[in-house]
Image (cartoon, rainbow, N blue to C red; front, side, top):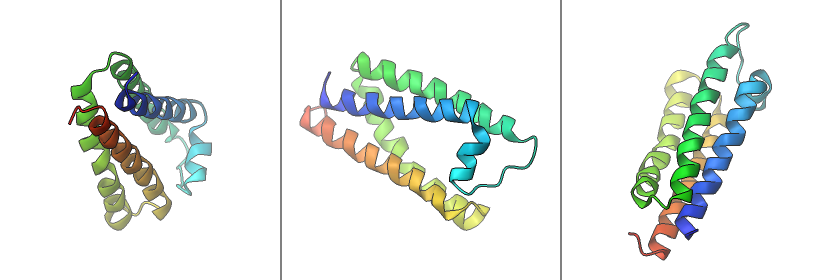
Length: 122
């Protein structure tokens, strides 16, 4: 497995674990981020967990198959997550702690970008 594929695979596992928590422990996950969950709205968190589960599937398969083009695309999209999360805090009233998730995505995107360069795919 190339360095880039390894970074995408590990990110896929991060998505997979996040998906499991959102699917089976949605209220507990939101409590970690100090995000209030109105009663009965945990279905939306579970729905997001399902989407994360499917994304994890794509990331893991793309890594295992060495789909370099997909890996490049993820660098761009994961780099934007932090901007959206900051916007959610500034304009949407989300708790500031959600920006930590954006930092994780940004760091993972940089890791993949560096790995793509090391693997001579960029």
